[in-house]
Image (cartoon, rainbow, N blue to C red; front, side, top):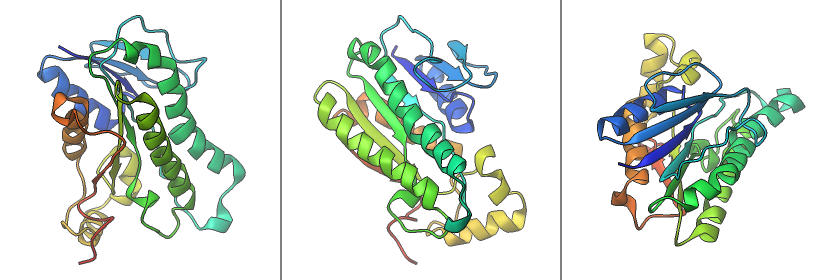
Length: 227
């Protein structure tokens, strides 16, 4: 049995991954700003900051940081507070979470950290300036931490394209929108939480023991292909 910490544990991706990992006999601790069920242990916080994140005595074999934003609009319409929120949620929260629980990870067995980027970090997309900037920072953080923590702690990120979760609901709220989004993808589908949870499980497990500092593109080919 391994012990994993999920931050942003109420997200659809986190809940699907928790179910998968607990089904394999692992322990999953959840930290969330919302009520959560299905976790081995759970903590409620108001924000993902060093001051708010709870003390955890256990050693950790893995940490996944899920919180993210989808804030799309023309560049000239972004407000300072919106951009700062994207950076706080996506980047600074991840930074502080890894820093907070680094001592726990150092006590774990072959520990792994998984962060979340986006296809938009490396593929220029209209109206994505704020989130692309934030997720670009996540990719830089991933590689820097992987280098600093090697060979003891692996650090990787997953970069999805549009996935069917409550966060992206406004883009997929009708059958027409769902079909249009699917048709824009080389695989002609919108991602699912199962697609992402399988990738999370892989990066946390011993199956990826020789993988660190990588951005795993789970995007149906969106970032690399034009078909």
